[in-house]
Structure formats: C-alpha cells, structure tokens
Length: 222
Length: 222
DNA sequence: CCTCGTGTTATCCAAATCGTTTAACAGTCT
DNA sequence: AGACTGTTAAACGATTTGGATAACACGAGG
Image (cartoon, rainbow over all chains, first blue to last red; front, top):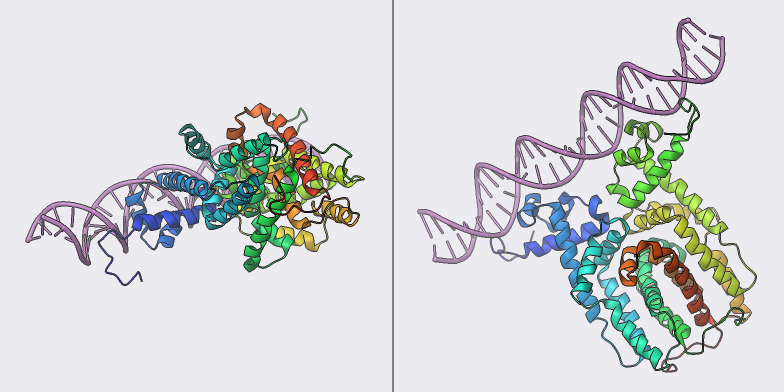
C-alpha cells in the first residue's frame, strides 16, 4: 500500500500525514463536523494512532490550527515582498495574495470557518501574533500606500478600509466559491482562468480608484 | 413567560419561535456544532417538541435554510430598489446591502457557513431560484451598470467581476468580523460607526474606479 | 359532562462518537 | 536477547444525541 521502502518502524513522517489529513478534513467538514475516523482514514492509519500523537481531538485541532496558522501567515507575508513603485506593490500584493490562497485553500477555509463559528481561537492567535510583532500580511502594503499618499502618488483615502476592500476582493471569491460558480456558469476547470481575470480586475479597479485626481463628490459623475 | 393570553392549546407561534431559535443556534454553532437541546432551550420549549414540528435535525435545518434563504433573498432584493442615476443606484445598493446584512447577520452567517463546509444545499437552492426566475439581488445593479456603460457614464469594465468586488467589499467584513475588530482595535459598540465609514468608503472607491477616464495602463500612475 | 384532538412535557431507548486503555506485533538499536 | 518505538486491533465506559413513547393539560364540540 505505502511506498516500496521498508517504512515500518522508522518514523515515516506519520505525524505530518496526520497533520495534513486533519487540516483537510477539518477544513471541509468544520471543527465539529470532522470525524476522527475520517481523519485517520485520510491519513491511512489507525484511529488509536491519533491519540498516540495528539491526545485528544481538541488538542489535534488546536495544534493544526496553531501551527498551520503561523505557517500560513509567515508564508503569505513572504509571498508579498514589496516592490518598488506603488502600482507594482499593489499588483504584487493582489497577485501574491490570490496565488497563495489558491495554494492553501484548506488553511484559508479553516480560518474563515473559525471566524464564522469559532470560539475565539483565531482571535487569540492573531492577538498573540500582533503582540509578538510578527509580520502581519496587510501591514506592509498599508505602509507602502501611506508613503504613496505622502508623495501624492495616490489620493488621500482611509487606508484601513482600502486594505480591507482589497483583501475582501481577493479572499471572498474563495468563500463564496459555490455561488460564484453559478453566476459565472463555468465548469470547475475554468477556475484558474477566473482567478487570472480576477487578479487583473482587482488591480485595474483599485488603481483607477486610487488615482490622485481628487475625491469624487456627489453628482460629479455622469 | 409568553404573552398574557391563555396561550396553551392554541398554536402560540411556537413553530416560529423554534425557527428563530434554530436560526440563531445554527448560525452561531454551525450545522454540526448546533445541539437540539440548545435550540430547545433557546426557544423555551421541550426538546421533544422539536421532533413534533420537524421530524429530524436534518429536516429542521433544511426548513430553516430553505425558508430563511428565500425570505432573505426576497427581502434583500426589495431593499435594493433602483434609483435614477448610476451613482445613486450604486450608493443605494451598497447602503441597502450592508444595512440589510446587518439586520440579518444570522442568516448571512448560515449561508456563508454553508458555502464553506456545506453539502451543496445552497447551490441547489440558488440554482432553483435562478431557474424559477426569482429576483437575484445583484442582477438589477448589473443591468443598471451595463446601461451606464452604454451611455458612457462609466468606463468599460467586466461587470461580473465588478459586482463580485462590490458584494465582497460589503459582505466580507461580516465574515472576518473578529479579525476586523482586532485591526480596527475598537470595541463592539463602534461597529455601527465602522459600518457607516465602510459604506461611504466603498461607494467612494467604486465611483472613482469606474469613472470613464479610460483604463489605466501599467506605469501611467505616479 | 364527556370525549377528542392537539400542544406539551417527562422519560426512556438505541445509536453514534469520543477518549482511553490494553494486548499484541514488527522492526531497530544496543 | 532485550528494551524501545511505532503501529494495530479490539474493547470499554462515558457522554451525548437523536428519536420514540406514554402520559398530561386543556379547549372545542357534541
């Protein structure tokens, strides 16, 4: 069944396999919907082995979330290295963000799930991360944008809301994926193309919306 | 406890109370995390009564989701009546959307939850709604925007993505509420003010981003 | 007044799950 | 050979939950 290597007694990354399996199942079924048996099956091991590595389901979940969250944030931050100009920075952020989420949908779903009906696990973790001065994905771009405002490269605007809008535009489609599929009436295999369009669209809209042409006032349009 | 009326044998809106309680609990704890006992307590009735009205937890959930979803969509559509100009239409949409979601957070959470780890219940319902030519909240604005493009009031742009961006910007903050709270570092009671700012911000950014000044090309900015 | 039906409760049952433990087994390392 | 680790199968007790049943309350109608 397993690889051809002897792979019996020697520690064959079992813990990691459990980790991955747990992440997948937790992400798909939710914290409560997930069954230990399913995780064990998914990892190709006996259910008792789950308790051998992680004492309880609770501890398994916490471990997966804690470690996964840290790794997720770090990886995301790293994939969002700053560029030279504001425009390139924004583009790099949007492209990097969506690409990264695409590659880590399970973790993203897990975190969003925690947002929706979690018991504050995410909040605690985020608060700790901020307290520990860890790199928080959006802040780098926010700094960049702030500098751009100072330089008159983009117009004055509430950056917190702007950043939230950017993240929303990038992330929400993954949440509402089933709904999006319906309205774009495309098969699953077109999802890649959809994301390509999406990235370009967001950057386009944002750049236009941030141009330093002075704020629009009611009635000025049309 | 209930109203002063005799209120024993006559159907005292018990079904509705169950409905509301179920919605609340399902939204907060998720489909699997919700306990029938908790729903019963929340409704102030005996647990067996749940089975009297709705046979199983599954059927209760389906009923709540089905009915709630239909009512939610209809109400949302109705609160998004079209205005005269494009600008007013967009503003009305954003303000109406956020206000409506604010008033129906439970149902919104339920639907988003279903998006994240549901078994296709939402998809089936949406597909049926579209099939039945029911009013789908975003389409009205999309028509309006399309007309505006034709009239040269806004620039040419992919409307599907634009609409998705608008909805994302309105809806996502509710999903990521715990996270948003952290970054805006405000108490709960400021949530109202936050939403006010948010509405204004979205409209502002969108109007600027849609102005018919021709698309921005790489390097044109700054 | 006496049934009858419905809303409601208290109580109980069966099944699913979980966490935990135990016994056994296969290799590895000394 | 013996100790140790990773692993499995099996079982147990506890808890919880979903679901069924019987009895109760009370208004309606003959």
